[in-house]
Length: 277
Image 1: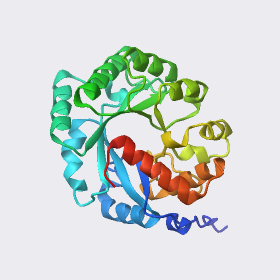
Image 2: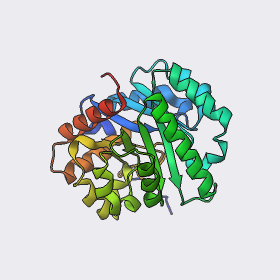
Image 3: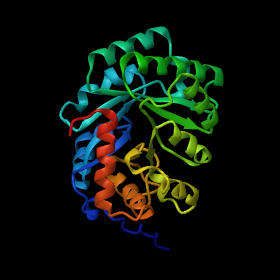
Image 4: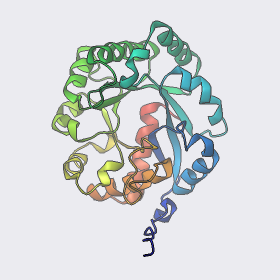
């Protein structure tokens, strides 16, 4: 019996979006992407992605890989200790991060930081301590914050509000189902929200309903690559070029033209991170 061939998937450039988009959250230093960075970046620009927020999970990753992005002026940086690695948030690491933020204007935000109660890699109290330390770093260095919150939205909000982050520049990265019941509270705090590929998945109607309620001026799109590839590339490694399919779905939800949604979300990201177009 012959093997069934994969159905051809549409290429990102087939959507013909202008070069005005931003992938607000990518892990381009991941295995499979960093080794092919030039090709990945070429595909992104061909798809209409002008800027990419590269997330370094701690100062070691930042120091090891930051120079690899020098040829790509559209890339800006985020850095933070992921909650699953919160044990690494030592005094020496915090000092290293502090110096980096003081000296590198390309470091635009502290993130991704927060809480992750889905995995059991790190005790909750250690995650909370690391979260609070990095929130303080964001205040000290005058940077916005990018939040990772998985199965922990209530506790994330409790900590953020107790640390005085209502009204401060904050992006809720990879907005998903566990945060939907708290959407009104997130919006009341004046925060931005970034939508990932799972909004394209058929089972995520609750998420799509929520996307329709987010103020347009606080809406961003992201890949979180190499994870969470959108339909029609679900199941394959994700990369910045594929964020166009997420944007297409968000545009459909909001009854907007894809070009308008794409450019608006791109401009929202640049404004939030303080990036010059």
